Image (cartoon, rainbow, N blue to C red; front, side):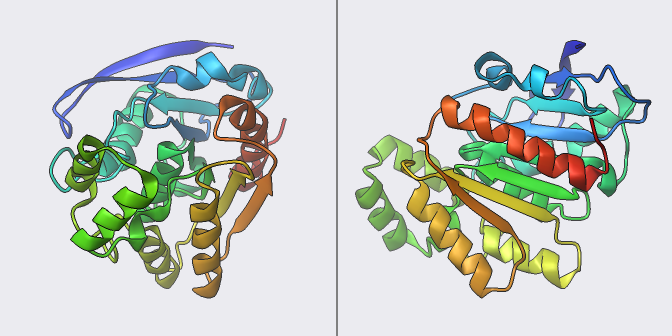
Length: 261
């Protein structure tokens, strides 16, 4: 199927950037869009390199946009770039200007893995008026639990973060992410109050090091009365797991976007 590397200059993050874009061979424009986010150590090419995403969507009238998310967790950094605004506002505006795609909430979905799973929830909930459905694989969802400097120190000890990585995370999230726009439960509650909550699908492998974070987030979402689907499957924090379950995500989004093979 057609595939292009989209290069453009971001005014929000102040640099040239890229997105890999898969274009459909079926259906008629304008097409819905699925924004698919990568993890911490990867880049815009990774979904194409490590999964059969091109094959999985070849019979769908769907554009898939895979942007470079750098290392900012797709949120507006406390000390640094506004990555949420970059991906949630600026990127869709560029895609909608240059490609034959839908420009409504009903035509946009977002998903990702690990850091990108957090990012999909951060953007999909933070911009709930722009996305109709969100999925997150093996997501790093624990930031809303950290309430201050002592909480960061405790998290660093428990997770064995290096001093450099802990400092990087503090620059991203600040010292007290709880209750801010970095806090996914807080964003979900805001979206629900506005009656704009997207459809949500969360999954995690039972051998994944982020499993307990995902179970805790699922429990807190349930206690708060936030509708969502949560699933666990055998698997680790690796591409074997994500290659398999991105197919579930595509079926989920296709239903919410109103498209079929």
